Image 1: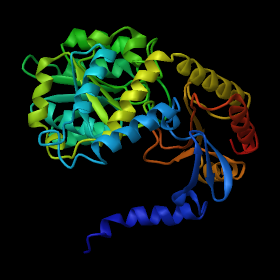
Image 2 (image 1 turned 60 degrees about the vertical axis):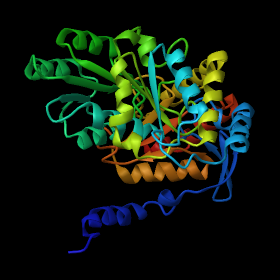
Image 3 (image 1 turned 90 degrees about the horizontal axis):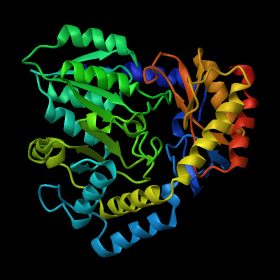
Length: 393
């Protein structure tokens, strides 16, 4: 038996999917024109599957901040946060995030994935329980697995199912952590956070909310779903990433609990990973400033999201439950989804193809993500491209 025998199912799936599309697994953005445009296979293409919600990667201020940081501090830190890898800008960003999120403490990690991995693998252990939404990101599952905690899933956004599990599992000597996302990455729907907070209070549980896709997108100030729902004080741990609305790379955990600082000494993914580069930190810091002073970016993002959702709703597409910067278009048959994806690409529009088991319900879906940087004309062209494949819905 060879080391790679376990991957035969993956190989078979790749061979099957390659029958439907030669380009799906090797899409290359040959030239980046802007936050919303690229050259793919020699064709000018509108990007509608990037998580680039506010257009920060191409903001001149962010680019200059990153370039300036490289000139002043070099390309990398060459060390972990516990060694030589904490620069002044890392501390400044942690303070800025704490101030923005109204939390007392913030720890910055190298990626959003490592933020969840670090916090969950260290915070909870075999004697604790994590109740997580079935559609939570893989990094949440992986953090729980690494920590050896008892994991129980509740049905996606099903408060009644969560309550049943809390009633069954709650004991005076057991710590329970509820983990949910603000805006779910596949279907673009929100967690019923007010109801979840009510249960958290009733059963004395802790609450972790991953705001990766909702930072800069939801809330009056852009702080995420907890702000929009008016329950920020009830969220014990806010997890986020720099790779969506902030247009950089990195992650964070913010909390009012003073003991969170001890994770710096106990979390292996934090202690034994090189810290974020000066360029990434500087770009994220500048983007955070911009989203605070330009709320019109969120307004433009939602205008674009509402426009595309309205246009697609006129056709027989199976969409998400409500308008969102993430708009899923579901297909019950994988071959039809591939044909639709190919059709969009041929019409100059790139979206994400998502296949089982990554999809919540086992179906295939085309995932659109809008940006404040999209022009109205571009959104109209995206809608027209979808109209050209509506017969496949």
